[in-house]
Length: 375
Image 1: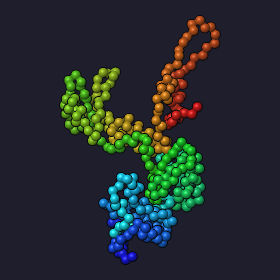
Image 2: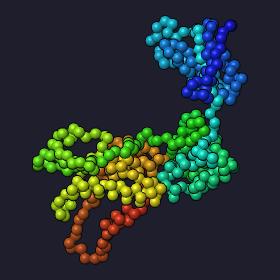
Image 3: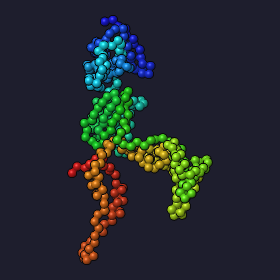
């Protein structure tokens, strides 16, 4: 068979070579045999074949002794749904992409390749909670028998889980790994171009981290007027107009009321207060290695708390849905106990300080249920 072959690099992906074939009538079998021959000649590379339909249709990436993959409409539709010749057996041209196989190890984040360690720090939320065996990146490398600046192969993840003691690590991206660990602390890493990063848990709420400009306001329901202040100018409008004018580019913060004095703070006082709170909160949280800036979370302690919970619970699985029976049981369980008295009792008695007991519970480490209990 006589045909022409044109080779070039993709302009946006210089690591991928493009081989375009034309000038002949290529059967699916001939295309597959050519692809298989290239895979045998270059076993360390990955290959993808694109066929011309209404537009170019790619197959999956294959390499080595894996069977060549060709796109077919029959993989997506029932044969009865397709018109005649919708899935041709011959093509006048086709394309093959070639790229180096992605590295089966990750670590690129500078000279020491510690990106896996950085992910582990996020999974355990704070340095103090990390097991001693993985508390420093050099401990991990030494236990794995690797040089200090070596990337950590995916094949070492079983050992990493053993070092951590209570951790399941799944990997997606260039390589897929499903952990066999039964640990409740579970996280998914993304391996891309030799670099590990942490995948966000899709089952959790992720606050939108965007810095908004603050506007303080005082609403007077009797006069149907809202007065707003942006740090420079004071404006007034009716409540309806104020509600319609709200948008996500601004954070609207109401003035606070002194309930003892029964007076509201002024707009200027409120504006100064929120900035002072932001600065103090930022400086205090820097001591814990977090450096939380309220202005990135709508100047809201509630939204900041949601972000912080997500930040400190990356390795905790998303909650199972709460069914109606369990919800009713929980509702009944938190109701107050039966209180009764026997005025005629003459004997030993004991007083329980439930208030102090509550404080001691609050001081202990909090545990959050994520699934139905087993009894």
